[in-house]
Length: 275
Image (cartoon, rainbow, N blue to C red; front, top):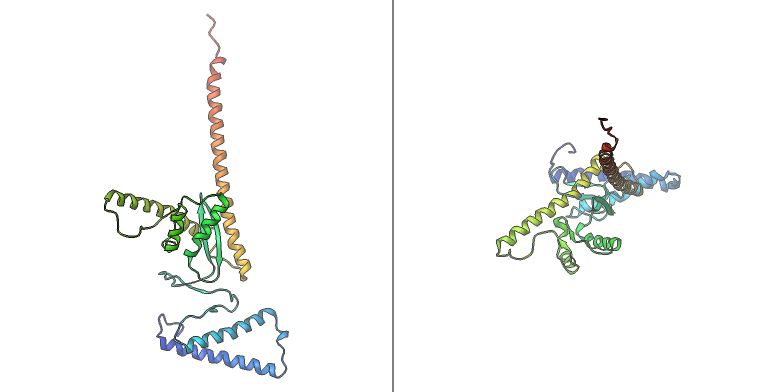
Protein backbone atom coordinates (compact mmCIF):
# COMPACT_ATOMS: atom_id res chain seq x y z
CA UNK A 1 0.00 0.00 0.00
CA UNK A 2 2.89 2.40 0.75
CA UNK A 3 4.18 2.00 -2.80
CA UNK A 4 0.87 3.01 -4.37
CA UNK A 5 0.70 6.60 -5.57
CA UNK A 6 -2.93 7.28 -4.66
CA UNK A 7 -4.40 4.41 -2.64
CA UNK A 8 -8.10 4.37 -1.85
CA UNK A 9 -9.28 5.65 1.49
CA UNK A 10 -10.52 2.19 2.45
CA UNK A 11 -7.07 0.69 1.92
CA UNK A 12 -5.41 3.48 3.88
CA UNK A 13 -7.72 3.01 6.87
CA UNK A 14 -7.22 -0.75 6.78
CA UNK A 15 -3.42 -0.36 6.73
CA UNK A 16 -3.49 2.15 9.60
CA UNK A 17 -5.74 -0.19 11.59
CA UNK A 18 -3.26 -3.05 11.17
CA UNK A 19 -0.29 -0.87 12.13
CA UNK A 20 -2.12 0.47 15.20
CA UNK A 21 -2.77 -3.11 16.24
CA UNK A 22 0.95 -3.86 16.09
CA UNK A 23 1.82 -0.74 18.11
CA UNK A 24 -0.83 -1.51 20.74
CA UNK A 25 0.44 -5.06 21.05
CA UNK A 26 3.99 -3.80 21.66
CA UNK A 27 2.82 -1.24 24.20
CA UNK A 28 0.88 -3.93 26.04
CA UNK A 29 4.03 -6.05 26.12
CA UNK A 30 5.94 -3.15 27.65
CA UNK A 31 3.17 -2.67 30.25
CA UNK A 32 3.40 -6.39 31.05
CA UNK A 33 7.15 -6.08 31.57
CA UNK A 34 6.58 -3.11 33.89
CA UNK A 35 4.05 -5.19 35.82
CA UNK A 36 6.70 -7.89 36.25
CA UNK A 37 9.12 -5.41 37.83
CA UNK A 38 10.86 -3.70 34.91
CA UNK A 39 11.75 -0.03 35.50
CA UNK A 40 11.54 2.65 32.81
CA UNK A 41 14.12 4.69 34.70
CA UNK A 42 16.77 2.37 33.31
CA UNK A 43 16.05 3.59 29.78
CA UNK A 44 18.21 6.22 28.18
CA UNK A 45 16.73 9.62 27.57
CA UNK A 46 16.19 9.26 23.81
CA UNK A 47 14.51 5.84 24.25
CA UNK A 48 12.23 7.28 26.92
CA UNK A 49 11.25 10.15 24.63
CA UNK A 50 10.56 7.75 21.74
CA UNK A 51 8.37 5.60 23.98
CA UNK A 52 6.32 8.65 24.98
CA UNK A 53 6.06 9.66 21.32
CA UNK A 54 4.84 6.18 20.35
CA UNK A 55 2.16 6.29 23.04
CA UNK A 56 0.98 9.72 21.91
CA UNK A 57 1.07 8.67 18.26
CA UNK A 58 -1.07 5.62 19.03
CA UNK A 59 -3.61 7.81 20.84
CA UNK A 60 -3.79 10.39 18.03
CA UNK A 61 -4.07 7.87 15.20
CA UNK A 62 -6.71 5.93 17.13
CA UNK A 63 -8.83 9.09 17.48
CA UNK A 64 -8.38 9.92 13.80
CA UNK A 65 -9.36 6.40 12.80
CA UNK A 66 -12.49 6.39 14.95
CA UNK A 67 -13.61 9.92 14.01
CA UNK A 68 -14.59 11.40 10.64
CA UNK A 69 -11.90 14.09 10.61
CA UNK A 70 -8.36 14.16 9.25
CA UNK A 71 -6.91 16.76 11.59
CA UNK A 72 -5.95 16.77 15.25
CA UNK A 73 -4.13 19.37 17.38
CA UNK A 74 -0.35 18.89 17.76
CA UNK A 75 -0.22 15.97 15.35
CA UNK A 76 3.03 13.98 15.51
CA UNK A 77 4.83 13.20 12.25
CA UNK A 78 8.28 12.27 13.60
CA UNK A 79 9.28 10.18 16.61
CA UNK A 80 12.54 12.10 17.13
CA UNK A 81 11.51 15.65 16.22
CA UNK A 82 8.18 15.77 18.00
CA UNK A 83 7.92 19.55 17.56
CA UNK A 84 7.51 19.34 13.77
CA UNK A 85 3.98 19.76 12.43
CA UNK A 86 2.52 19.22 8.93
CA UNK A 87 1.71 22.46 7.09
CA UNK A 88 -0.64 22.28 4.13
CA UNK A 89 0.71 24.65 1.46
CA UNK A 90 -1.13 23.45 -1.62
CA UNK A 91 1.91 23.68 -3.90
CA UNK A 92 2.32 21.58 -7.01
CA UNK A 93 5.61 20.06 -5.89
CA UNK A 94 4.51 19.23 -2.35
CA UNK A 95 1.03 19.74 -0.96
CA UNK A 96 2.28 19.41 2.64
CA UNK A 97 5.56 20.81 3.99
CA UNK A 98 7.38 20.13 7.25
CA UNK A 99 9.67 22.44 9.19
CA UNK A 100 9.76 25.89 10.68
CA UNK A 101 7.54 28.65 9.35
CA UNK A 102 9.19 32.08 9.38
CA UNK A 103 8.04 35.64 8.80
CA UNK A 104 10.53 37.95 7.07
CA UNK A 105 10.59 41.62 6.05
CA UNK A 106 13.10 43.48 3.87
CA UNK A 107 14.11 47.10 4.50
CA UNK A 108 16.70 48.82 2.30
CA UNK A 109 17.87 45.44 1.06
CA UNK A 110 18.44 44.00 4.56
CA UNK A 111 16.31 40.98 5.54
CA UNK A 112 14.90 40.87 9.07
CA UNK A 113 13.55 37.76 10.76
CA UNK A 114 10.44 38.49 12.84
CA UNK A 115 8.88 35.17 13.77
CA UNK A 116 9.78 31.47 13.86
CA UNK A 117 7.01 28.98 14.55
CA UNK A 118 6.79 25.20 14.29
CA UNK A 119 2.99 25.35 14.19
CA UNK A 120 1.04 26.68 11.18
CA UNK A 121 -0.28 30.22 11.55
CA UNK A 122 -1.83 32.93 9.42
CA UNK A 123 0.87 35.28 8.13
CA UNK A 124 -1.58 38.20 7.91
CA UNK A 125 -1.71 38.46 11.69
CA UNK A 126 1.89 39.68 11.89
CA UNK A 127 1.67 42.81 9.72
CA UNK A 128 0.61 45.15 12.54
CA UNK A 129 3.31 43.80 14.86
CA UNK A 130 5.98 44.26 12.20
CA UNK A 131 4.80 47.82 11.50
CA UNK A 132 4.95 48.63 15.22
CA UNK A 133 8.44 47.13 15.40
CA UNK A 134 9.49 49.31 12.45
CA UNK A 135 8.17 52.41 14.22
CA UNK A 136 10.00 51.44 17.40
CA UNK A 137 13.28 51.12 15.48
CA UNK A 138 13.01 54.14 13.16
CA UNK A 139 10.59 56.48 14.95
CA UNK A 140 7.88 56.45 12.26
CA UNK A 141 5.72 54.06 10.32
CA UNK A 142 6.85 52.96 6.84
CA UNK A 143 5.60 54.93 3.86
CA UNK A 144 4.34 51.80 2.11
CA UNK A 145 4.14 48.07 2.71
CA UNK A 146 4.46 45.71 -0.26
CA UNK A 147 2.88 42.52 1.04
CA UNK A 148 1.29 39.36 -0.27
CA UNK A 149 -2.46 38.98 -0.72
CA UNK A 150 -2.82 37.10 2.56
CA UNK A 151 -1.74 40.27 4.42
CA UNK A 152 -4.40 42.42 2.78
CA UNK A 153 -7.23 41.95 5.27
CA UNK A 154 -9.84 44.41 6.52
CA UNK A 155 -8.05 44.80 9.85
CA UNK A 156 -4.70 45.51 8.18
CA UNK A 157 -6.33 47.93 5.72
CA UNK A 158 -7.89 49.95 8.55
CA UNK A 159 -4.59 50.00 10.46
CA UNK A 160 -2.62 51.23 7.42
CA UNK A 161 -5.24 53.85 6.51
CA UNK A 162 -5.35 55.15 10.09
CA UNK A 163 -1.54 55.52 10.24
CA UNK A 164 -0.94 56.87 6.72
CA UNK A 165 0.63 53.69 5.32
CA UNK A 166 0.02 52.70 1.72
CA UNK A 167 -0.70 48.98 1.60
CA UNK A 168 -0.14 47.48 -1.82
CA UNK A 169 -3.18 45.64 -3.16
CA UNK A 170 -6.38 46.01 -5.08
CA UNK A 171 -8.80 48.66 -3.92
CA UNK A 172 -12.16 47.77 -2.45
CA UNK A 173 -15.40 48.63 -4.18
CA UNK A 174 -16.06 49.51 -7.78
CA UNK A 175 -13.22 50.79 -9.95
CA UNK A 176 -13.18 54.57 -10.63
CA UNK A 177 -14.77 55.85 -13.81
CA UNK A 178 -11.69 57.81 -14.80
CA UNK A 179 -9.49 55.43 -16.88
CA UNK A 180 -6.35 57.43 -16.07
CA UNK A 181 -6.81 56.77 -12.35
CA UNK A 182 -7.28 53.06 -13.01
CA UNK A 183 -4.17 52.92 -15.19
CA UNK A 184 -2.09 54.77 -12.61
CA UNK A 185 -3.27 52.40 -9.89
CA UNK A 186 -2.38 49.37 -12.02
CA UNK A 187 1.12 50.73 -12.66
CA UNK A 188 1.58 51.41 -8.96
CA UNK A 189 0.36 47.93 -8.04
CA UNK A 190 2.75 46.38 -10.58
CA UNK A 191 5.63 48.42 -9.15
CA UNK A 192 4.79 47.33 -5.59
CA UNK A 193 4.65 43.69 -6.63
CA UNK A 194 8.05 44.06 -8.30
CA UNK A 195 9.44 45.42 -5.03
CA UNK A 196 7.88 42.53 -3.15
CA UNK A 197 9.84 40.08 -5.30
CA UNK A 198 12.83 41.07 -3.17
CA UNK A 199 11.31 39.11 -0.29
CA UNK A 200 10.89 36.04 -2.47
CA UNK A 201 14.51 36.49 -3.53
CA UNK A 202 15.55 36.39 0.12
CA UNK A 203 13.88 33.00 0.55
CA UNK A 204 15.41 31.72 -2.70
CA UNK A 205 18.94 32.86 -1.92
CA UNK A 206 18.59 31.68 1.67
CA UNK A 207 17.71 28.15 0.54
CA UNK A 208 20.25 28.07 -2.30
CA UNK A 209 23.23 29.82 -0.70
CA UNK A 210 22.70 29.81 3.07
CA UNK A 211 21.26 26.27 3.46
CA UNK A 212 17.90 27.25 4.90
CA UNK A 213 16.44 24.10 3.34
CA UNK A 214 19.19 21.90 4.84
CA UNK A 215 18.76 22.51 8.57
CA UNK A 216 20.31 19.43 10.20
CA UNK A 217 19.66 20.33 13.85
CA UNK A 218 17.18 18.04 15.57
CA UNK A 219 16.30 20.17 18.59
CA UNK A 220 14.05 23.20 18.04
CA UNK A 221 16.50 25.56 19.76
CA UNK A 222 19.36 24.44 17.52
CA UNK A 223 17.26 24.76 14.37
CA UNK A 224 16.08 28.24 15.36
CA UNK A 225 19.68 29.27 16.03
CA UNK A 226 20.74 27.99 12.58
CA UNK A 227 17.93 29.90 10.88
CA UNK A 228 18.73 33.10 12.78
CA UNK A 229 22.44 32.83 12.00
CA UNK A 230 21.63 32.44 8.29
CA UNK A 231 19.89 35.83 8.34
CA UNK A 232 22.75 37.36 10.33
CA UNK A 233 25.18 36.20 7.65
CA UNK A 234 22.89 37.64 4.94
CA UNK A 235 22.99 41.06 6.57
CA UNK A 236 26.76 40.79 7.15
CA UNK A 237 27.40 40.01 3.47
CA UNK A 238 25.13 42.92 2.48
CA UNK A 239 27.23 45.26 4.64
CA UNK A 240 30.41 43.78 3.15
CA UNK A 241 29.18 44.42 -0.40
CA UNK A 242 28.29 48.01 0.50
CA UNK A 243 31.73 48.56 2.05
CA UNK A 244 33.38 47.08 -1.03
CA UNK A 245 31.38 49.43 -3.25
CA UNK A 246 32.27 52.39 -1.02
CA UNK A 247 36.01 51.67 -1.21
CA UNK A 248 35.84 51.15 -4.97
CA UNK A 249 34.10 54.51 -5.40
CA UNK A 250 36.57 56.14 -3.01
CA UNK A 251 39.51 54.67 -4.92
CA UNK A 252 38.01 55.86 -8.21
CA UNK A 253 37.48 59.37 -6.82
CA UNK A 254 41.06 59.53 -5.46
CA UNK A 255 42.49 58.17 -8.72
CA UNK A 256 40.55 60.69 -10.82
CA UNK A 257 41.65 63.50 -8.47
CA UNK A 258 45.32 62.51 -8.77
CA UNK A 259 45.06 62.26 -12.55
CA UNK A 260 43.49 65.72 -12.73
CA UNK A 261 46.15 67.11 -10.39
CA UNK A 262 48.95 65.58 -12.45
CA UNK A 263 47.40 67.04 -15.61
CA UNK A 264 47.43 70.50 -14.01
CA UNK A 265 51.03 70.23 -12.75
CA UNK A 266 52.42 68.70 -15.94
CA UNK A 267 52.84 71.96 -17.96
CA UNK A 268 55.00 73.47 -15.18
CA UNK A 269 57.64 70.75 -15.59
CA UNK A 270 57.98 71.08 -19.37
CA UNK A 271 61.37 72.59 -20.38
CA UNK A 272 61.17 75.63 -22.62
CA UNK A 273 63.37 75.62 -25.71
CA UNK A 274 66.40 77.94 -25.35
CA UNK A 275 66.36 80.17 -28.42
